[in-house]
Image (cartoon, one colour):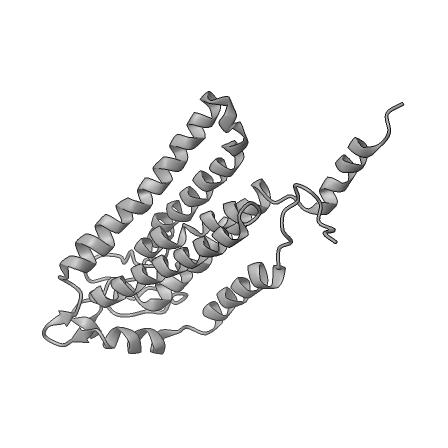
Amino acid sequence: MNHSTPGASRPLRIGLALVLPATLIALLLLVEPTRLDFAISDLFYQPGVGFAGKHSYWLENVLHDRAKQGVILIGVLAIAGLLASWLHRPWAAWRRPLGYVVLAMALSTAIVSPVKTLTGVHCPWDLTRYGGAETYTPLLAERAPVVDSPGRCWPGGHASSGFTLFALYFVLRDRRPRLARAALLFALGLGSLFSVGRVMQGAHFLSHNLWTALFDWMICLGCYRLLLYRPAAALQPAIALEAAPRR
């Protein structure tokens, strides 16, 4: 027998949805993954030559520029749909879901630039280890004297273009669960692909992009909880009122 409340959201697994990413954030703050970052970036760097993907047409023009434009197109379509929902009454039911997608994607990408400016973390290709002029300093450490210019590499910006699509998972999870899972895998895969590409180019350490994934997940989750999540307990009084006999 199905005991679910009509119109209610599927229950959120707080352990997986919130506690796990929050724990990862705490671990990354407590244990700086510097050795792992360097070990992975070293695989793509050759002294005297540079990073393997620095001048790759496929990584720069296709995976970076064109792919980012594709994600932007998704956001533009969501905005257009939201505006259309005010003009075309049959689409009114999609107003809140589309509004959620627009808000979640906008916040996920908008935080990147100001946080980069605030933290001043350098890219791998800026560091003396990889032929640059800057000294590496951990995320929470005081920035070393800047030789060229402040860094703007934490968190990863391009990875956010992929991980911002976590919004598609949340907007679909209560309507089309199977499609939502596919959207989640797509967002994880695309964000990871963007991340690896930028690591190969020397633009980011792997941990920069892991931070991006965690930020985007928490933003999309928070917006979902505020705008779309409808717990069964909150719907019970309304359902009971509708079911009550009229006198």
